[in-house]
Image (cartoon, rainbow, N blue to C red; front, side):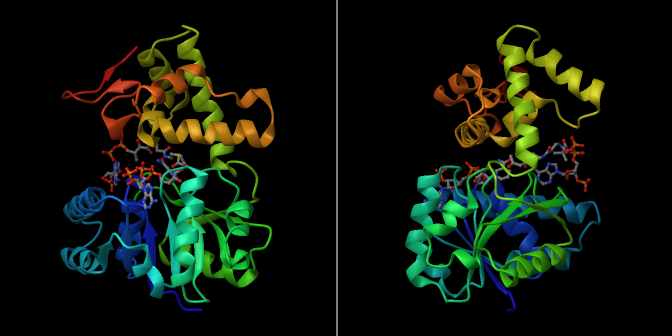
Length: 291
Ligand SMILES: CC(=O)CC(=O)SCCNC(=O)CCNC(=O)[C@H](O)C(C)(C)COP(=O)(O)OP(=O)(O)OC[C@H]1O[C@@H](n2cnc3c(N)ncnc32)[C@H](O)[C@@H]1OP(=O)(O)O
Ligand SMILES: NC(=O)C1=CN([C@@H]2O[C@H](COP(=O)(O)OP(=O)(O)OC[C@H]3O[C@@H](n4cnc5c(N)ncnc54)[C@H](OP(=O)(O)O)[C@@H]3O)[C@@H](O)[C@H]2O)C=CC1
């Protein structure tokens, strides 16, 4: 089935990046969010990121103009009815995602493929609550979407081959590379990455090192582009905690216990870059460690 129109639910940091790469690849994009401010901010950010690509000769000004013209926004989920593929990229909470799919369902064409950009939640369980588990799968981009090459593709237990192949072809058309993961908590990337980030937070919690020494150690000692605490702030501490909880609940192993310090930061509303405070304070000119 030809995929031309793509619906994106959630205009946060992932939603805007996903809209960006689909529009550049020639798809018509309709992005929706509960917040009009989030939609406006996402379009402004896409414009800025496309300008950055133009200034670096990664794309032409014409490509940028055409991409911007392909992006439309709406606050009505029902407007996504005529899309061929939907990527849900709303907050990492199962009840939010389930409610979105339930509200979308009556408006969709029978052929529309439903996917979630979830970092960790069971694709099989999300799919089972829709009218089309065979046309449902995980479509997991990495942050920042315009830069990161990987998309994890996750089949639910009922996902059919046509759906998988259609999503695989879309990843190719986006110029990205897919890796296939089985549907177990947090799939591949976050099964490995998030316990490392959680361990970095324990290292801070137990006083083994400061924010600066932990991040410097991993950047200069293991050649990571970002330190683990800087990366946690970049991902969003609410998302990190949600992923650890899915690992802990789903695998029932204490090695996935979320660090109480991570919980405390989330309880404070210090969610990282998106709230301007996390393991670093981003309110000034340069980030300042909060510990
Ligand atoms: C949680 C999940 O479910 C899964 C995940 O996504 S886990 C997170 C995965 N992501 C990572 O691990 C990111 C690790 N960090 C990095 O790779 C790098 O620090 C980075 C690419 C983000 C920035 O790199 P940098 O060298 O420090 O910065 P900078 O030189 O300014 O940027 C490098 C490129 O990224 C672009 N860029 C940086 N931030 C960007 C953003 N937020 N959006 C779009 N483009 C961005 C820059 O324009 C630049 O592009 P070119 O290579 O074309 O010049
Ligand atoms: N951050 C990351 O590095 C990565 C995240 N992901 C996954 O992508 C998804 C989105 O994460 P991210 O973009 O970081 O999160 P953000 O918090 O940046 O954005 C989520 C957006 O979804 C909106 N939203 C909440 N409820 C609804 C709803 N019912 N309908 C429509 N929009 C809604 C939020 O609005 P409001 O702010 O008003 O609540 C917000 O604008 C999550 O599943 C996450 O696990 C995947 C890969 C990487």
